[in-house]
Length: 185
Length: 258
Image (cartoon, rainbow over all chains, first blue to last red; front, top):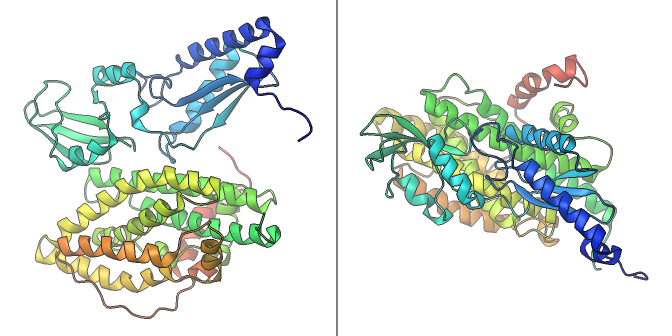
């Protein structure tokens, strides 16, 4: 290579503190806007709460790069999420941007934020276990889930596939209400 | 760089990726036929969710195949406008649903295959295939949990359910041979570090299937020679009907979009 290629960070430094400050402000504004984009299936949560936003950065050409990951490969919400994110960024006026589909590393339910887990539970969906390795025990019924309504531990698995691919269907034997569990993946 | 003949490689890679994508697409389309007809609402949701995951895999794989080919065909053009002979799925995927037990048997056989295949493909030298496999394998684990749980319930259930799934197993078993029969393309992919060694996938699959059949009190059918070549585009009579239904809209209204 004959010329030294500067990364976006180095370029900003070279361009001086004013440019670096402007870029940081755009990134912060973009994160705020994305935090207002609801998941179409679980509107209580934003796409930031779900850990779907993988990065926001300004590249060498001053274009804001936004990385988004799908939860499940066939999830129909993926397209809606992408469009909603683009609309939010456009309306928020963050300048030129590009939304990139990030497949690797694959999204994990471990990336749902603590805030996201709290919101899920409030919404009536039991949040995923923090550790994917506990998934087996949950689905085998050897590890008990507490009912999100009455906190009873007397619950059972009805189906491993609920209303969306990401959720399993459970039932409380005490209050007899069904509830959903966000699967570990 | 020691890699030779990039031109021949991209044609081979195109066919290899189509094989993977077509298996998911055809099986996903088959499972979709169950929507509204399952024995219970939970199973309707279960099979529909699995179908959705499979079609998601197919979209990623066919999009990639179209890019490799470089002739402007995207996922939709590859799915909706190819003739039967250009489909490269193993023909197990296109076998009819039969009763619920037969669908479950076909699902267990293919889920276990995809699980062992994708786990190895996640270490492929082809970064894009590795990423797709690493993403998909997480979902396939759930598919196999679902299908193998049902197979155990039916096999170790009543005399009637046992007889039905044993019949389905005997019926579908010969088609599994094709999944592991490595031809020149499979060998080329394994040698270039892109695809796994199918004999390795086969022994892992055998161990997994034997454990499930044992728990389900089902008898493993004897090995029989086969003459199926869906991976080369020679299909059973069933694929034509699947494509006729799946491709109907695009054939009648070319380039129709949502």
